[in-house]
Image (cartoon, rainbow over all chains, first blue to last red; front, side, top):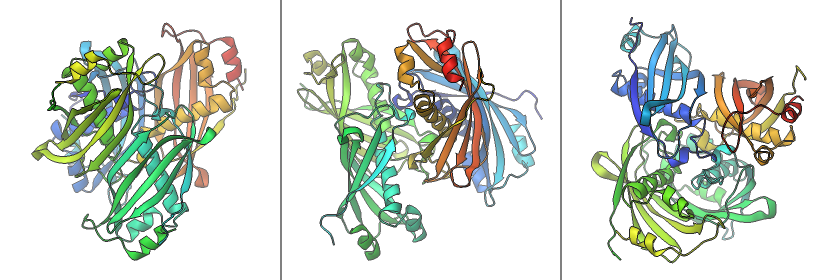
Length: 138
Length: 138
Length: 138
Length: 138
């Protein structure tokens, strides 16, 4: 296993419907951006799109998330969502993230999300298969 | 069939995450409010919750929507979504709606949504069964 | 004035949080995509970003929208939002739109949005200035 | 100051547009529910609606949030958002929350949100005034 796992980047742009009444990205939308980045990176960087998990009878469930807000993103901002596996556990993974406003690459938010792997049929938490651990150990 | 079909009301409150950067309810959220009212009224007023449709192997698909905005809803406003079947067609229904700010019952928006009924297995448009027409003819 | 006004395209990708319980883009989000395309195209294609309107003391308010759904967009789909001014009125514009799934450029949805121009200070509808009409007559 | 601050409850219902492709409430929406509960409780329970903060030249900014998911909420579920001030700091407050599915009052999610108070004009973090501390010490 690789203790220094690769960090991957996804680029996106703020949509007007992401803004709150203060003209900043609504606080909960940053977690949506992380989710979008994970879907992108699962397919593009780990070679294992969500559809493949589902075909193998697995699903990911989020068990927790934490986020710190540094600088708000605003209308039309392009941003980079960087994520990496920072811990592999028996039943899941912890994914760390950083979101940067693209211009100047200043940190907008950072945090982590805990996911467990569940059996798609029973909906119960299961053991992370070795082949998934291997694909995630890049 | 009843040419003057009953209008039903659902009451809801604007959530802060519904607001746009102008501190008004985001224009697309009014259609979400109509959808929420339909789910509520299908179960509560027509005695036919969405789950029952799905158990019968049907699903509703929206084919079109139109909306006119009169007065914006704002932070914390309570509002009433009134909907009624204004046309029953071979393959679906047209649902008319009005959204009122509860205080003073002033019209905020009005419009209509066209739904077709599809076979859940094939995903294809099907003929509206008589028993559904009857339940909707109140 | 140009009777055949230019159509402009913006490319975007479906985010996971755009999906509804049927794994299709939620019906109201298509209007959010149109709004995002307009912001992009106002700045990039008409040379008149929303911020410039606001600096001039104007704001756009949506008065109505209509949409027809043809084919659903799904997880991760790239799509193209094409919009154009199809009518210039005394107090605003009607914008037509088409949304295509990028792969194969099949139509996903089409429709139009009516906007009026309001004075930012009073919030009242005003007359569309000639310089805006000119910029929109491309 | 009261070390055992009062917990307040707000009741809400899941809207269909809150659901994700797994027919559960989308993970980020729980934070929207907490925000909605805070607005409700600021006005109804603390006697200090957000508008009053703004009139006094203040605004609240979220600096961080953490959430644990226990059981998913689903279509049409009524739920209770319980929040309380669990720490008052020089520049802000930490608000703890629990979200229960109303039927059976089973825990759906829990967590906390950190807010700082900012001067509305400068946008800078400021010192929490005594009168706000007093109102929050119930």
